[in-house]
Image (tube, rainbow, N blue to C red):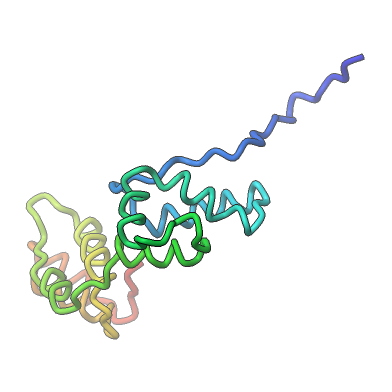
Length: 162
């Protein structure tokens, strides 16, 4: 005899399936999503490296093999693999180059102040600036195309960009 299920109950996929990594993605964000899948599927710690090696894709696997040769990736711990690949895909940015990009950013024609601020915030991530908000304020004041945008930024000392 089959029990009828209420309409509001849905089935949940119990097969571990994760989008494979490709180099157009940010490595660290992909790893975070993989770790969420580990929690969802209650993955045992000794299996995490296996899943990582499987889902990282052939290009990343080849890169890993080249980096650890003559050792084998299969003999590595999950954390070791993640750290090694993180160093490869996310090398420490050159702070001076990032600061130059940040300070060179100008507001584009037709770009709203919000879009401009978003672009500055994205560039400032790698600047390691202790005065992040002051740098953004300074850049907006220097490069904003319209005086009303500059007044909007400097008019309220307590405003925070977010």
